[in-house]
Length: 198
Length: 234
Image (cartoon, rainbow over all chains, first blue to last red; front, side, top):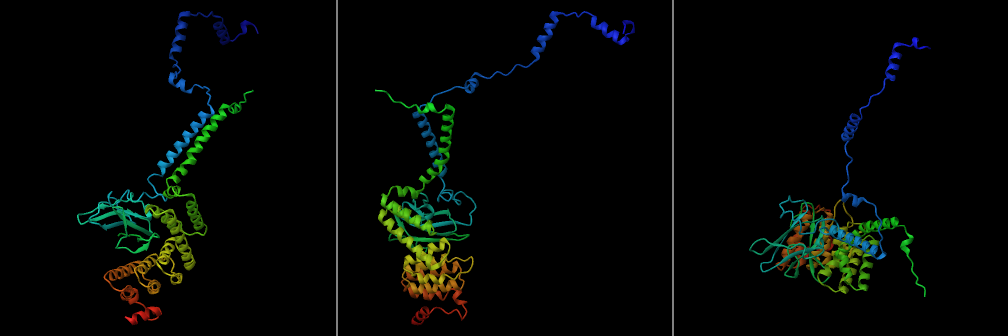
């Protein structure tokens, strides 16, 4: 093919390609720098973060590792003690705590009110199989000047043995059936059914 | 003299050692929590203060009870009660052994009953009732428990009502379908009469006639022989 036979469009392209390129160095630098400035800077991590995440190696003696392990065990024991505190083995709250009547809560089907008359007593507690016979767990409150002491407890349905501890001395409830305690004295018995009160 | 040293920790790569340490820590956290909870159990605490012989005896009795499916709660309660009453370890063991035997005898007399019934029945035996007297309660209606009946029976016997009279009267009421309120009302009246000086046996016989179940009893449901004789003798 000779030049005279070229297509005018091809001729136009060839003419444009032959034209020398004129570059203004200053303008080019400006454009490049503008483009660079337009790019966001990469976020730089803080020194503190760098310090934390930086990998490092350390040595631990057998004594130190034993101490750390002992510390972890201690934390476990503490956590277990805290978890078990405030609930009985069966998961119920300790008797005397969370008194539904005192807290103004609706009375459930198995709430039982215990009343004992002891006009001259200074301190009266309710003990029973429901609180492991621990006199610190269900202290009774003097209800009036007639010497009536009372406490209201949520009890599970079933048969419960109990007694009152009046100034350190155990007494059976005269208004409830009695049963031997196995140590030469008598306890009282409360059979709790649905809707029981005493 | 050559110095012997064994750098065991150099044999284990550090990363493996650290991982093992973390594992030990996590295991401690999960495994010691139940142990701590057990340590706060009053029974465990009470046993830990006893001498080895009595502690072993108590644990053996408790284990034996579990092995023959006797209820755990009455035995546990007996031990804790003894501790709170400041009974000696020997007294606690004796009391626990007695309770175990009573529960076992009650089970033999009654067969499979609920834990509450078994505990209440053992209280009847403890009060002086006989296993044969419990057998009257063996025939039972579905869904009905004799806990209140046994509780009132044990109380009446301990107040001086003759065991045979008390058990036959209460068993008769129970077989006639008396409810818990009837038993409790009967007990309340009888104990009030006894408190006023009435003979315990007479108090029971007087009050048993007033119970709704006795009033509505059919002619076929005659009271036991012993009871009839007592009524005639009044």
